[in-house]
Length: 418
Image (spheres, rainbow, N blue to C red):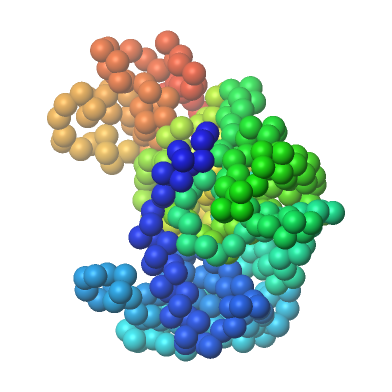
């Protein structure tokens, strides 16, 4: 990809301007020294922005007054959480302060922070460490960490909203700085596409920032970067490239989509939670559904992913789909009991007086909530019923890449999940 083409992909410029304006307001509020210390962006959560400065997490919500919007941003809520321990677990491990709260609604409490601190990081797809480990690393970070004999590699807050990963390299010998762009690279790993670090000099594009570097100088920098980027990082146990990506997105965040592609089948908040099926499972992935603790997926804190055909969890360590991650939810005895009882109850939707092909299919195949879940999975996920024959043809008669489930599939004994 040519440099001119890369620079044309500007990303969401207004998003970056909003983040930049918010940082300036935080800097002014706390008189931060951003010449020597970073204000790292950690995440969005509950419509608020979470930052790290030295040993303190700063949570802010903003209010957009009027047009021009970006010029009228005001800080509406500010909370600070000073960490007294590397892995805070109780209120005694933090110092929590409400600095500003214009609305007077105290939604943010220490419990929310303590529940978040060990969530898997969503900053990038390839680093899943909990936030307290991310914070420990960021606290020790400085520009000289990623150093070779001749070059320094580092991200910089430069206002660039380009979604193509970009970093800086400093040539210590010639005292020159250049900017490196690394377009995403994917490979097919047996039916699953995965992002990989750059492999050749053609995977890296250099902007010499007006230093009139020769092609040979650029080539030398690319070779050193490729070797360094593909070495394992001692802290995260992944390649340095993914750590540089994480640093870049905390120092110069850009607008990246954290997408939930799912279909909700049931809402039972007073029982065990909300039941969903995936839109796009991986090839040869076993059929599964999942349960969340909130109907708003952005506010979900834990997820139980369960197989249809066996009483087992499909995801055991954490819930992860791309850069969407949550803690794994292990259902307790009472929750499993309520889930089993619910599956065996008659489907209310099957008794609806709707009309059309969809409702006819429900009346033909669905009697219990378990069969309703199978119907929703087959139709939404496994593409059953979308052809000319509609629901006249039984599931599994012409299997697609995604397995379809028969309606006579028995409910597994999910008490074995214990």
